[in-house]
Length: 205
Image (cartoon, rainbow, N blue to C red; front, side, top):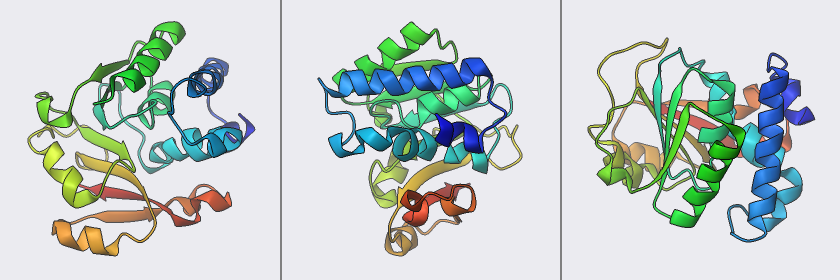
């Protein structure tokens, strides 16, 4: 957890414990279910947990904010964010039931009260949220239609409601196609590890 506390020294002992528990939970389940690449197991804290928490450097969600995590997989970025923002409500969804089972079991074991995980497709979600987050789920032109009608009109954060996506690599082509105003932030402005050299946050208000 040193990679986490290095950048988030304000975390409480309980939050660090939850993040450690989550890391162990993923390690345990990954032996049975392919949640993340096996070659990433030794760098799980950096490549998955810290990567998820780049969103916490981009925005500090105000209490009561509602966030939808589309394609959460093993709980990224939703679970690390739910731990860091205990007064923000997170709805984690994925179409693969066995992955959601892993997330649900962690939420239950850890007593996380501000996150709910559900096996469903984005198109079937009818609620509205302040923000929709995702982590390398698919290309933006394919992802955006899944978010249609799901952004709330009321504003309660320092930035406008919208989509916050963790992406990597060359994005110019797919972002030009969407024809929407967007903001691109290099994660290297917050984290110095070489893994983040090609990683970005894409914010679409």
